[in-house]
Length: 253
Image (cartoon, rainbow, N blue to C red; front, side, top):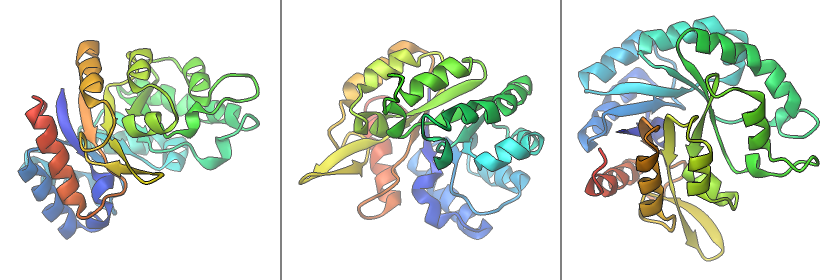
C-alpha cells in the first residue's frame, strides 16, 4: 500500500500552474508519493504529469466531473492515460439521483461509461458520503443498490472513513463488505467540539484507526491510502503533514 494526499484538502492552493507546482513540491516534502487530483484548476494533463514526476509523485485517482464522465467518456479516459492513472472517480452522486424516485437513473446513466472505462483497463470509482446509508422505502440503503446494480469490475468504492462513521455505520464492517471494490480508501478522522462533529487529522480524532488500519492490512486488496480533510482548523498543509507523520509512525508511507 502507498500513502497519498487527496488534493481536495489543498484545493485553494492548486488553482493555477504556478500554485500547483509549489503545492505539489510541499506535498512531496512531507513524504507523500501519490496524490489524488480533486478540486484542481485547469491544467494540461501532460504538464501535470511532468510536475508530478519532477517531485516523485504519481496520480493514482481523480475526482472528475460526473457530467464529463457521462458525456465525454473517451476524452476522460485519454486524459487519465496521459496522467498514468487507472482510477476515475465520482466525488459525489449528483443531488438529483439521491432519492428512491431517481436513483435507478444513476445506474441507467453511468452503466455504459463504467463499462467503457473498464474496457479501457481502468475503473470508475464512487466516493461515498453519509447519505448512501439512508434506507429507502424498499428497506435497502443507497450503497446496497449501487453494489447490486454495478459489478465489482466496473464500479469501485473509494470508502471514506469519516463519512461511514458519520452515517452511524461500522467502518471495519464496511471495509470487509467492500473488500473487492476498494483499491483506494480515504483516511479522515472525526473529532467533536461540544455537540458538533468536526474533521481532524488521522489519529487525532476518535475513529478507531488501529482497528481500521489492521482491517485494511488484513484485507490485502487496498492499494492506496489517501489522506483527506475537507475542512481544517488552521493550515491544511499542517493537517496533511500531521496525518502523514501519524501514519508513518504506524509503518505506513
